[in-house]
Image (tube, rainbow, N blue to C red; front, side):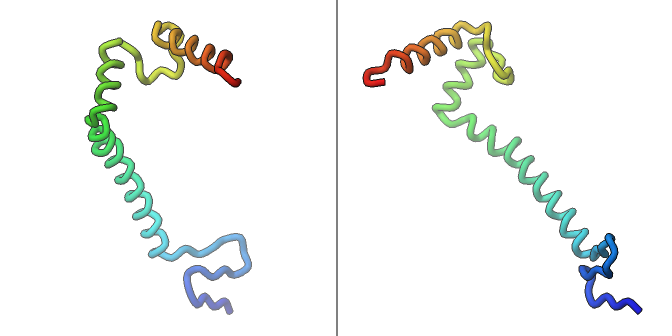
Length: 96
């Protein structure tokens, strides 16, 4: 005779009995996580984009025609200037 005092006990087999409350809790966590992600993407991120320093950068990127979703900018002139500046700054820095 097998006795299961609660939903989380195992009977020595590979299977484990799962309580309905545990399943409901897992679904609740999933939906809560999706809701938090939605709030961040559609509420927090647009609000952050309206902050003055971020808005100035976003306006510059938009007016320059830079594809902000690209991973690496090889054809943008500003990137070439920035790369040259950073390379020179690290190679020819005083004391380095």
